Image 1 (spheres, rainbow, N blue to C red):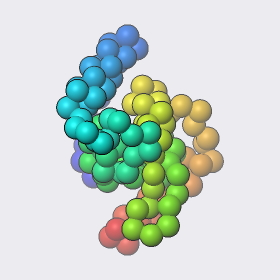
Image 2: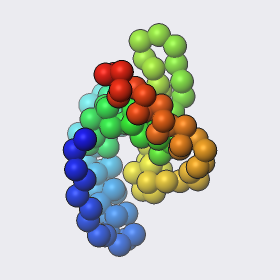
Image 3: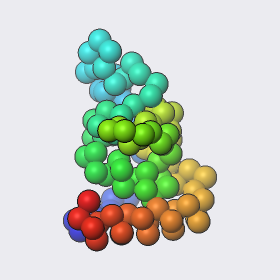
Image 4: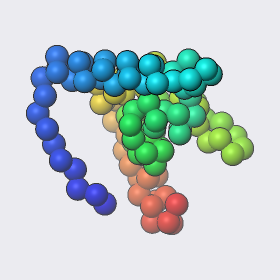
Amino acid sequence: MTPMTLIQVSPEQLEEIVNRAVERALAGAGQGGPAEKDILTVAEAGEIANRSPETIRDWIASGRLRALPRSGRQQYRIRREDLEAALVSPTPNLDAEAWADGVIALDQRRAKGG
């Protein structure tokens, strides 16, 4: 597991950081790009959040990010508003039981090598 570095920022600073990141994502998106869509793939959400698809899937498994389950190749679809909420507030309306289930599922997935 990669060690995490914690930084201290005020809520106002965090809001400014997120706003700038969203503005950059919106400005850099081409026709039909992720910034113009309301429903995102894991890869698109990762691009907007400047995180890897694995991190986005970890957020979903832990309950930090809500996602719509899908069958087939695309496992999840993420509503833009849910991604924005996860970026602004890391634990919006976190359900402790869902979080614990997600952590256990994530540990099991990692133990299997997936």
